[in-house]
Length: 467
Image 1 (cartoon, one colour):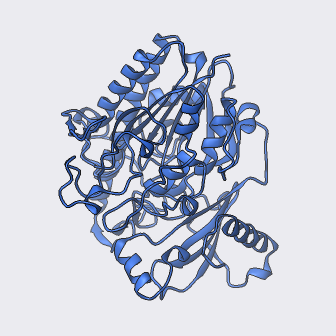
Image 2 (cartoon, helix red, strand yellow):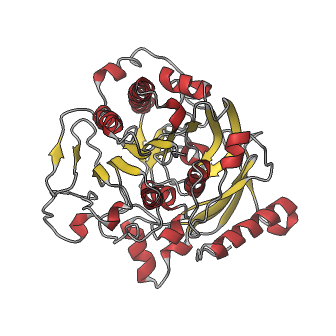
């Protein structure tokens, strides 16, 4: 019997709150809302390391970031990239006879400027051209780039160093390419296509005016945990930001999401017109979220829900009943879960858990949890740790996210930082504004259990973080 097709669409820096049906952010997403209403919404989809490259490495390999070696973004100054010999989902699907394709942002290769000051491909800053071969992780059709945030004038590479420059919003163009791939696929073989949109990643204003106009006159309240005046982008110093400036950023972010919605709708229409709905698993997700002013922060890399919580809506017409499912699916769980649904053997190298049974039957598991964390990855921070003879990956923060709690052990991003332990009750305090500071681990059985789970995970993944 022919295996199901797979279309996996994911956006960069898209938090789960920015979906119309969630009724959290005031976003307009009619196509996504309809898709969610007819399929399975995973309410606890978690980015285990809320940063682009670490999540992507986990998604592709089913392993945790520290194991893949991609503990931070593939960036200038640090020679970090995904091992080309991984048993990745692309390699597994290709070996099972699938036509494989990847479109859009990749961000799993060492930036070319780390190797040559003037790359022949024209790649600049963190960007990279991925040539045909093992570094493409089994994806045969390739229309991609490393990382670049010029959404309105994107560029791509196929099978040569020649850069293809496009004068169209990246989401719209990549959807065009995706539809062409599906139309041209061999009808006698199954296909697997990954489409990676860069928006709603900053800069937020690089979005067509027609989407901005949808929000021009919209009035809405900030989330209760938003702090304005001064905000901190990622791990950088605080910068001045007025309410008006933040609202402008948020509206542009929402506009980007509405643009994704329209183009995702186009993709769904194409699948329907080709009578592929019953033969195709469709996933809509993201690599991590965006704080957008919550807790006085922008971007990601922190343990708050706005950063780690990602959309995950999955559909397979005739095979999955519409429902909201509170199973926890983390970055490393996605590969084995998809392979499980497709009835394909899961490689022994995979560390995540196959949650396909929970998705297909909606069975519950109250003990569900995932271990989350981030590592000091700024070039200057890494240099400082190494100068002192310290392993930077032994610092940062680690934690556990259950259905009800988030518990975090934070050592900080500099050697002199003191360790703090924080507990958040997500049911009683959904905006995480009232953390309980834990001074003594042994006073609370729940905290003792969380510490043991984190220790076990650290041991299993050879994570040098010391609890």
